Length: 358
Image (cartoon, rainbow, N blue to C red; front, side, top):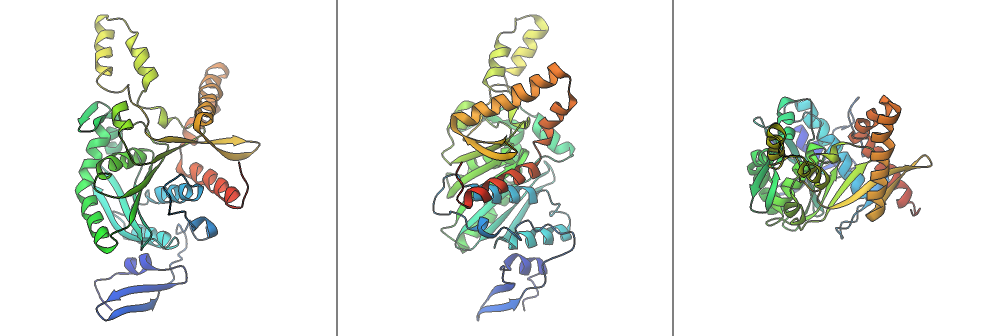
């Protein structure tokens, strides 16, 4: 047994039948994996069943893939970069989906974290962590001035945060390509992690085979020319009254700012806003998670935009102002949690996978 291969690596390679396959100069050595179940450990794929039968031959939106990506995005919040037990917990959870934990990346300067997972001869997933109660994440989110890139103007904070880990990601992807040259890559993340996933997609799509990008509750990342320039299929999933996708300001905010008079102080604020904070645009296709008759439903296309407007603006914002109901306002943040996305997406995937059509 190679002493350089640790427990986490065994667990990461574990198949659901409990065996581990290790490459060696003499062939393949099969071992029995240690019990990867641990009291209190997150094993969200343990009872996934048919939901792990992913449609990998097409890049179109998939209910099953969306749920898997949301679970992987939730696992990114484990402090695996600084805690060995969390690292093993992440590896054990991934093993339930036949995914091996290939690499983790972390920038102490920006607080940007994530990991790369791989299923041999199938696909790889690049996952970014979302916003935590950390000063560096707050600075990244608030640094919303426009940043000039070869593909257009984008959010400065998101761009710099991704650049801080770009070298680590490229090195990990190069090693992955050497082992699995035809591996297709998915990119995902929740909240700030979704914004970083889009930044990564923009930077990597010219040199890597990216199948699709799934984001959950992501803020806007770039100006229209930047967002429209992405060639990779992007599926941005938004849940109910989640307020984070409304920032930074979009076209409506830019139009309202333009109506302000050129008075000394207001004119100064207006010019500052025009350098960022407004004029952003979402990238990709909206998938809205609505509630109807006590069950979650997925809305797409024009219906998604209408349901989102009705649910968020009329049902929550206006309802809060008119009724002075704090419960309405709290829903704006409750709907942002990754657990809320996971619950709805799993329900939708199980229902539709069983043959029930929307």
